[in-house]
Length: 194
Image 1 (cartoon, rainbow, N blue to C red):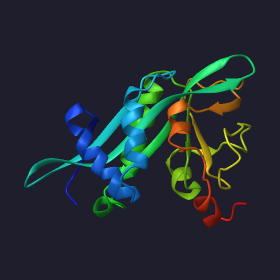
Image 2 (image 1 turned 30 degrees about the vertical axis):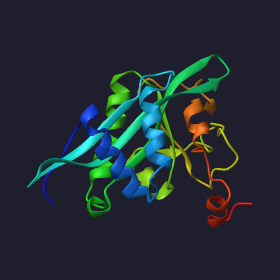
Image 3 (image 1 turned 90 degrees about the vertical axis):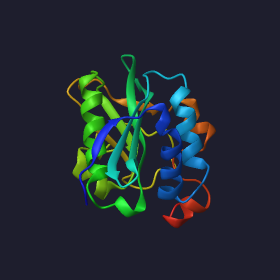
Image 4 (image 1 turned 45 degrees about the vertical axis):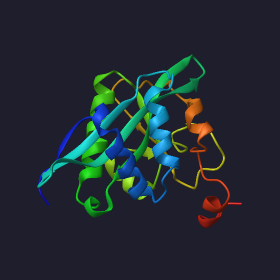
């Protein structure tokens, strides 16, 4: 595979990012619509949206995307502005080439540089545990829903994290409006939920 670059998403990337998530998630609306709305949603922190690009015969091509969106941690001492990493998508033909890992690394570095203490996500424990995330339940963080599959609720503790920062993750309204928190219905049944 040729090398890739990672940069901030720009407005002219929006259509390519939408197509990328349609292909990566196999759904033309759910995740692409979530991304569109997260770009302009009011949240505790401004969104951070990164793309991975490669140069091919047609010029620069967007092949991966990750988004960090502002949420809150409802801690005893006070509310804490945190990020959630969602979504992460890579075009199918570029998956398993390190692009997802590079996007996660860049996103965590950018969040850390901003002084954000925590980044949460819902995802495959085997994949994300090798990329800086730990089981959030085991560390004392309460999930925002009971519909997370076992091990899916994960957190990366960054350099601004302090021991008192424990509590419940509170997603921004956009995630709830798109039903993108936890699994529901058939998706939950496929992983053995009730």
